[in-house]
Image (cartoon, rainbow, N blue to C red; front, side, top):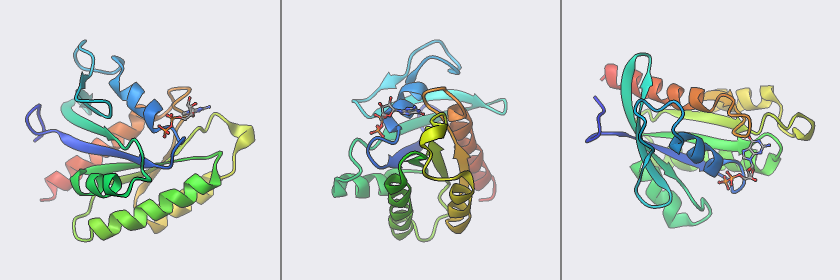
Length: 177
Ligand code: GDP
């Protein structure tokens, strides 16, 4: 059971520029919050709030990895998260490759537990700059045994669906224990 004392720790991972800050801002915004309070901030990259998913409250602590290239930071986040949103930009193929690398690194840190991960193809509003197709994203998620969603933080499209999806996966894992 999550609550203010025992939140789900969800980590945003991905190359620089893919939209992690944009995701965190949407999460931190008042929209979709159960209470009218803004997000509680614990420093720049951590934010906690309670949202309702399928009629049940879920408290999420969101960690935004401010620089995934800083190795100790990445390792630290890979050890502390309960679940991961693995972001790339559909307009940036190197960020897609980076997501694969991060997935492999995650597996090294989390070999045993089935940690919920969603592969997130962000910036799907930029249709004319697309470099990674939907089917490539889906195929990659299948290989990695994780869920897949395309989002647009700019259009606020599917961002909450991604957060809700991760909560559903965390609950499934909890219920199967
Ligand atoms: P971060 O480095 O992963 O934190 O990426 P940011 O959130 O700072 O985003 C990098 C740039 O991409 C910023 O200029 C954002 O406004 C822009 N951006 C983020 N998400 C989207 C999106 O879904 N669509 C578009 N068009 N731009 C986006």
